[in-house]
Length: 412
View 1: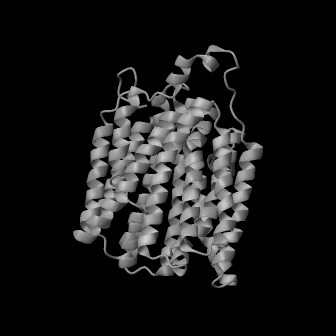
View 2: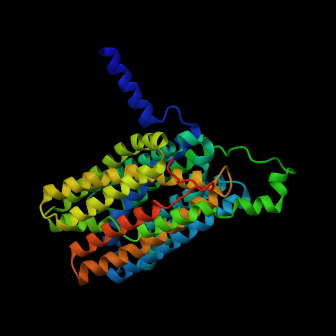
View 3: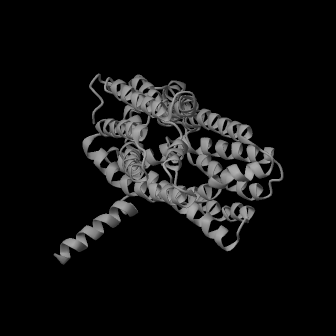
């Protein structure tokens, strides 16, 4: 019995610590953890801070629209650029470094436009690093580990998102009202994350100078060309994303159900903890069963959850739907990237394909929040949530048509 317990503990350590993953993958996961600690220390405080500098709801909306638009476009472009350069790490390093630089300047912001500009710079930084970082992870592991590697990374991202608001709350507890101090202290985890990339992340071997793979224009062009096998999945991702509005609307639903400010903060932190716990096991499962079935299962969970939110009224019901919603993230985040990488082919258009995936989902999500907000205000919250559920179901139906480059259904 004791031996079984010891084995179980070792298995859990291996699962959540990624002991069998390459150092670069673990380093990128740690970097995302520290970066999200920094980001989530800042993000929940930005609306009130912006308002204190004279920026009302219109400025807040413009800031988020500009930021998300810039993010979606750069995510798509940076992956292609990294394919053409033949290197990923410079984009990843620059992205994390630029994000770290915005923190101290945010603490010094004296006008609303300063905050808007710094938020846009932070989104530029994220856009630069996202697709090349995912390509680095895909390059570092064998195909049978990719979904787990992506999920492990994303899980640490969620764990950082859980720690960040708690860290900010702790600072404000001991220094009430010192929001600028929170922004300044957020620089520390951001710099730690950037240093982790610099020291522990290694670029995989590239074709030697003078070889055909390094010099042939046809080979280089093929490396940035979007594979046909990805067209239908990308349309499915875009369609699903049109129903995937900001999670802020879920928090608004919880607030309307009677959850107070403290409860919302605890809910948000706990929500990210559940996402972290679900990510690594779900990634390992996707490697065994294939990414597409798991994506479809996750989208089905999403549709059920959004239908549930449409009719939920009490706090207990809201909490239950939040827990199930966290499972959707675990099921899909690693599996989606793994499917894109598999359909991209062996090291052909890897950065470009991942960039196209992030562009499709980013543009869909950008439009989704606007659509959701209009439906919420002009019709009802239930209509908005049911539309999201319907778009998720439509995306799943389209994804069922996806086939790999040989014409076989993309099920593994």
